Length: 274
Image (cartoon, rainbow, N blue to C red; front, side, top):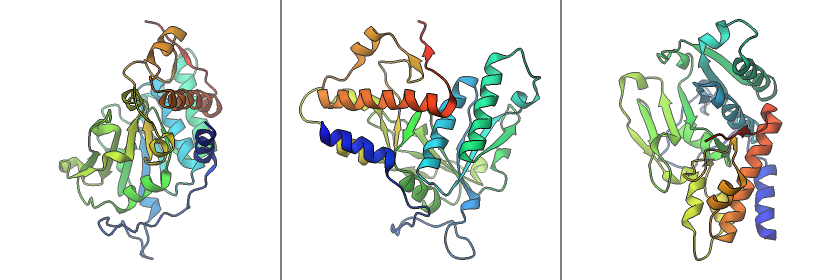
């Protein structure tokens, strides 16, 4: 138990290098004039299509900011959200407030695009990484290494599916992706699904290894509606992993997400209605 507490504390407070440097010879670099990655052409991107998704996207950017990712942070959103008049749309006003907070506190660039999304958001970028929300970034340095050094010149790359992780949980997009098909498969270990904690019904569970051997934890739990909802106690109790150590990790991650939602967006959990 003490070891697990120490592990979570480390995840919260550890400081990552400002400029990651890859030692993997299979990864190719997006160079600058000095021979190091040009971080002005690399970005983590979120594209919420509904008001409900905005806060979870900003939470990802808050994690990247806290972990000192040097890549740009860009939020793409429907242009209609910027055109609609003030007042009368409660959800729209919340989204605008949360986006402004993200821009002010976490350096998020806001890019309105046409609702039919033609990829124009790529703009001056060479490559972007898209993490499927909701989730928690554990290791920004590893994600930045993949973003800057992956051997992807054209097209898109998706994570290998398996163990509760689906291909679009992490996607890498290059400038010429619109005319290319997926050309690279990224390691499945980059992402863990919190639903995978249900697989540890018996035997031992190493919380330290499970938390540290990944870069992003995605909240894809088949037994709960999502971490944004305040599910009834009976539903949460029935959904808890059977392994007591996996249950501790599962409970802690859901609690951390709820607290970050409040701290980052100023929002309580949504009421769950069946």
